[in-house]
Each structure stands twice: as structure tokens, then as C-alpha cells.
Amino acid sequence: MPWLDAIETFSFTLAKIGETLLEALGVICIVVGLIVTVRLTVKILKHRHRVMLPFIQIRLKFGLWLALALEFQLGADILSTAIAPSNEALIRLSVIAVIRTFLNYFLNKEVEAQMELRERAIAHNYAPLFMLDSPIDFMEIPQDIPKPPNPRP
Image 1 (cartoon, rainbow, N blue to C red):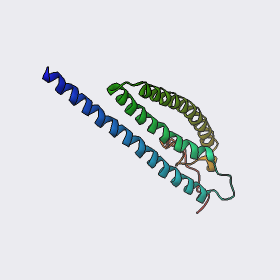
Image 2: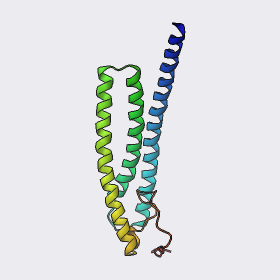
Image 3: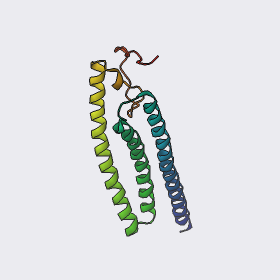
């Protein structure tokens, strides 16, 4: 049946395009994550003189971008496995799924710890931890809590 061959060819082409796009998005996430992490590091270094560098914030920032990149990579591998399910593709998919699961689990634990630390800092109005550009950018300071004064003019 020629129409079935046309559908199969179209599906294969569509899956290949999707796989390529997802892999490209994964690479873009890693590059953007690196840039954002370097910017955060420079910002922290400028504003934290004679204080230990908070590696956990920097690691969390980059880790969140890596987790997003792994999601895209997992999607690309699922598409490639759907097209040609070889043993190598299945093993690769399994390894990436396990890595992504562990990374997300531990990132979630660290994000929860950072949220708790941030809530305590807000409650006690502790300025050094009251950062708007934290590794958890989506967490905004509630509007009813006053912002602490800037320690440097």
C-alpha cells in the first residue's frame, strides 16, 4: 500500500526533526545555564566581599538548567528509540532516565532546603540571604514583607 509507505516516511521524518530540535534545545539549555550561572557567580563575587562563596546557590542554578537539558535529551532519545528501537538506544534511554531521576530528586531536596532558608531569612529580615537573584528565580519575595535596606549605597 503506497499510502501507508507515505505515512511511514512522513512519521519517520517528523520524528527525526523532533529529535534534532529536542537535542538542540538541550544544548541551548546547557549554554544558557552556563551563562546565567557565570553571571550569578560574578554578581555574588561583586557583592560578597570577604565572605565565603555560596557554592550551593551556584550549583543549584546550573543544576536546574542541567535538569531541563536532560528533559529535552530524554525526549529526543524517546523519539529516536521509537523510530529504531535497538538495544543500544534502549540502554541509552534507560541510563538518561535514571540520571535525570536522581538529579531531579536531589535538586528538589536542595531547592526545598533553599526555600526554607529563604523563608527564615525573610521572616528574620536577614539581608545577606534576602537575595532577589537566587538560584530559585521563580520565588519572589512576598509584597507585604518590606525589602531590607541595601547594605551598600
